[in-house]
Image (cartoon, rainbow, N blue to C red; front, side, top):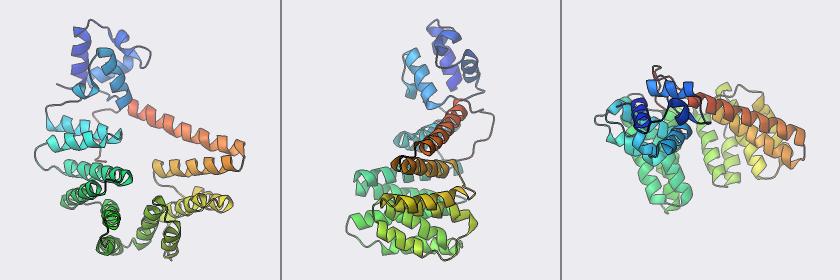
Length: 303
């Protein structure tokens, strides 16, 4: 039974019309699309509908077939519900490409969370499991591989082991792909997140050739390091250079706008601070609008 069929069955069992179930949060037309299976609700909308029906959101998302289970796992991953995403994906029998990619992403992100929480052994176990999932993939992600190897190295460092082998493996994987500059930038970001700012700066100094595809990431990283050092003018100069590049991805754009808003607020330039805060709100609204309706007929790529 699909999600839409479950919603319609529960609504009718309670004697509710579509208008009554939709309430003031969504339109009746949107609910009709969800019930007919032509649209997929966001997690916020699903939780809202579940509350009005008196059931849990998880009960609505508990599918019986593999395709539906992976679809539910993708939604959990996008909502940041990493443990639930992993549990759902692991319920799927077989070893599909999408399942492996999803597990690699979810386990990697959860390993980062556990490392920040101080659960080093669990973080390392998750990272190594994600690395295995990624390596078994038909098209393993070099970006994920590097991030996992650096995460494992960070865990080894935390528990007193020597992380050199893991870091060398990460560097070699990027050198083979001709992305050695990206290795230094991503390692600098990892060091920066752990407040090792001087070490992060040294990694950026290793970048002698900067391809166009990495310019925005490089300058945003330099800007954040300067911001963390309270060098507002230096940070602003770097971030403005990043703004002039072709930024790839909404998450990096959001990161840039957030830093610029912070700097202008610290400099008491409230007009520019408001300008970038408004840009962030526009991005968040666009994301919410897109997540409210995702046609199921379209082919979704693995995260």
